[in-house]
Image (tube, rainbow, N blue to C red; front, top):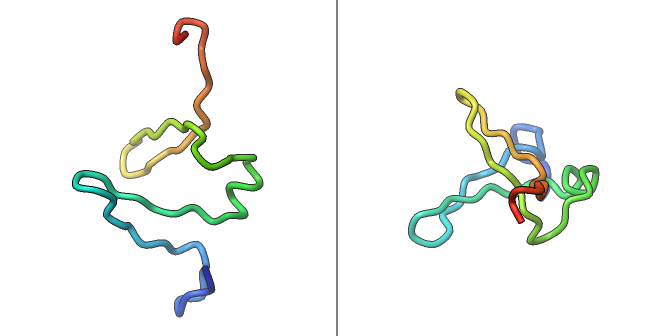
Length: 63
């Protein structure tokens, strides 16, 4: 994704996926720095007006 008119390549649009989901793409350099891969599980959490996305870790009691 190129630089937008506002000057930031980190501004993204929300896209509709299917009937009841929305998606936002992540900058590839973010994913590379975090070591994230396609189809990797992540945890999405709402904290006030922010969305937090964290790597999902399998816990002993989740097996």
